[in-house]
Amino acid sequence: MEPQNWDDIRLFLALAREGTLQGAARRLGLGVATISRRIERMEATLGLPLFLRRQTGHELTDQGAALLPRAEAMELALQEMRREAGAQVEIRGLVRLASIESLVAPVVLPALGPLLAANPGLDVEVHWGTATVNLHRHDADLALRMVPPERGNLTVRRLAQMGFGLYGPAEGRRPRGM
Image 1 (cartoon, helix red, strand yellow):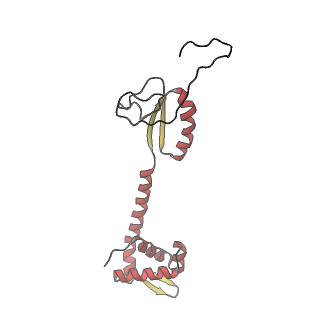
Image 2 (cartoon, rainbow, N blue to C red):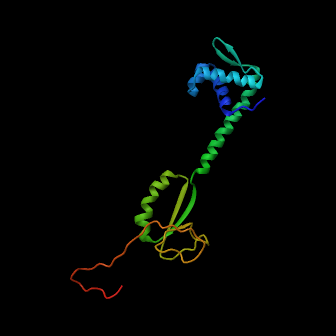
Image 3 (tube, rainbow, N blue to C red):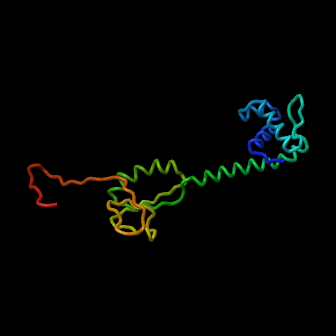
């Protein structure tokens, strides 16, 4: 006896629930002939009759009824696996971001709305000030800074380049130095 694949179990469940090949075909979006052929193959592989064929539809045999709870358990296990996989890719938890106020207002805050809307399990604490936080001591998880860190084993990525200038009236005194 070779092992069954999930797709065959899915067909078995659909036919058991719908009671007709047409109903199972409609539920799964497959052809009647495909479902009939695959159910016959499953019965041959198991060496058991799973359904009684009647004019009004298909009815589970005693052997099919005995296997139904196992098939439903497989279906439930697959649903739980998909749900858990979805939870594993979900971004969630608390992230503490440290930066200076002049970057928080124009850069961080406008980006937070869409980020939090797309990731409802995420919480962000924003700490701003001029003091440099120590990421190794976990004062914050991320830091948005104007200068790169001088030391430490940190992953650093340039997000933008900003220019600065000194401005004054055209008729005013020119600065002597920088």
